Image (cartoon, rainbow, N blue to C red; front, side, top):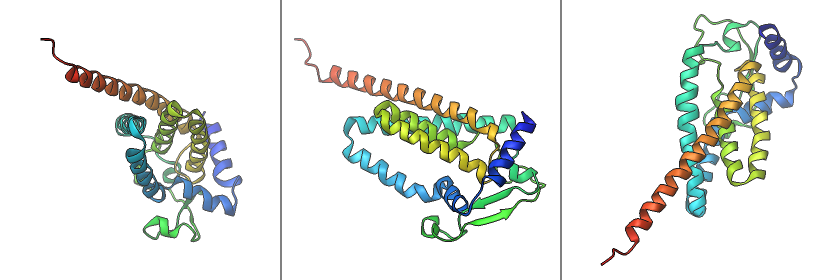
Length: 214
């Protein structure tokens, strides 16, 4: 697996590249760019989504707790796998323009540098699993439980996000499939628990509002 992993990484990171991808891949990989839109979307769902929207948001919140905070954090410490850009010479590291906030600099030329091995192998965090991939596929899975077409489309975007993490030098190809599975698992479990919580609350409300027998 190690040799195949390296070969596939080099193909994605070096050979299958273009100026368009150098700009596009860091863009879809940057959480700083998308956070304002995600916050606005969550607020819209909370206000206008009704009960279904609140269930969706609770599912996503539980999914983030399970997938990112618990599983991803624990596995990163267990496997302690360095990122490609921290241990290999010649990895092409791509990112958005260094200006802040990122949203105001998405049309500027991307930052493209060639890596050098680092003495601090966790300078950029550990490679396995990919929190980006876990979170996105968790989100896609939760969305699928509510709207199958939306979940499917988000899954396709998730594939592009996973590709971008390799393209930008942050992850090995073998990091991706397990991260997808963790994300899907987290999404299904999160939706199940959120639905259970809503059912219990609804049952409690019915019992409290039921007239007492005299």
